[in-house]
Image 1: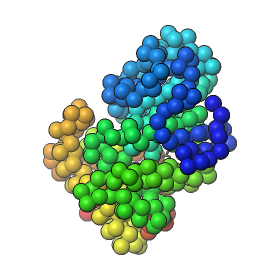
Image 2 (image 1 turned 45 degrees about the vertical axis):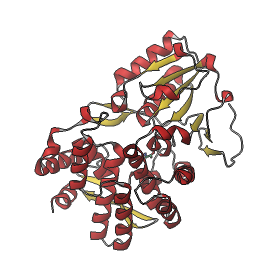
Image 3 (image 1 turned 90 degrees about the vertical axis):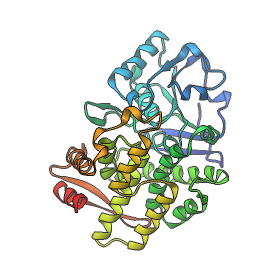
Image 4 (image 1 turned 30 degrees about the horizontal axis):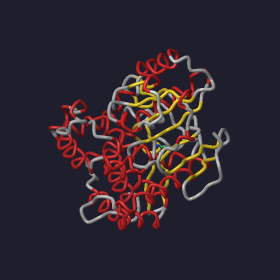
Amino acid sequence: MKSGPETNDSIVLKTASKESLIKFGPFEEADFDPNKTAMVADSFSVRFLPKTARAEQLILVPRGEAAKSLKVLEQVYAGLLAMAADRSWSLMAVGGGSICDLAGLAAATWMRGINCILLPTTLLSMLDASIGGKTAVDYQAYKNLIGVFSQPAMVRIDISSLKSLDKKSMAGGMAEAVKHAVLGGKAMLDSIENAIAANGSVKTEKLEDIVKESILFKKSVVEADEREKGFRSILNLGHSFGHAIEAASGLPHGYAVSAGLGLAFDLAVKRGASLAASGKVKRLLKKIGLPTSLEEARLEAITLSGAIDFGDRLRTNISDPDSFVKAVEGSLANDKKRCGNSINFVLPMDIGQVKTELLSIDYLIAFLTA
Ligand code: GLY
């Protein structure tokens, strides 16, 4: 598969290792060779497989974070072996971020690397996991501990696959779009504000533009620093508190990042950031239906615990505010990106302006409990 020039329907992400083609619109037959493509999907995303895909070349994996384990990775390898997939084969991920992360790692390591094609089917995975070549599985209590940077050969973004997503899932994806806009600047944030209807949902006619702007922003960051030696870490905005909230509550990633972003603004304001910017972003997140504080995150976790896809993620400590805060503090203290007793924290100082500071975990915990 050759990457063509950038057009309105495609974006080329160029790094030292590869040119990745990001194509918009429905999957085309020319995108893959069905005889030599293994596919990874789950019981939900299987409906988005290309029509010419071969059922016997499908590897079914569990839904959500449960797919990101060494055990499931081994199942993917076993499937590839059973198909006698050699270096001329491709591995296609059809699903959300967990499937993109898992299949990306399998493709990067199978026979020292085969082509990877990503078909993200959630808004979150279109904006985040499918862009930038981070692949990983979780290990023990830690997310994304085992993985490599490996750019996919192609990403196919079909906005129509989002039609089947419920409002809650779309809202989770919008948290990453808002995060990109806080980093990208006022014009991006204004686009998102204009794209949100009075009921908090994304206006259908604006969705593709929002996705494209967000991907173009992430592309610019990844092209500048593919392996996160420094600059790319701005994408961790909202993630230090966000990951701790996700681990403590089981909230879906986008919801936890939204609460983490709200808290990061609160902390930044204490350290001289723009109060107006903080208010603007938090109002937008709330309008979309996302949490912006620890307590809102806890209440959202309780609400979502009734949802079919959330039940088994429920953490018992969400029923009591004090034990929830304790659990968040415990997760923060175990942050895998900690440097000794501190965390490189991304502070949003204004729209389009962040700074990274080494802040002690004790200071961050004191802030959470203040
Ligand atoms: N999800 C953050 C990154 O790709 O760097």
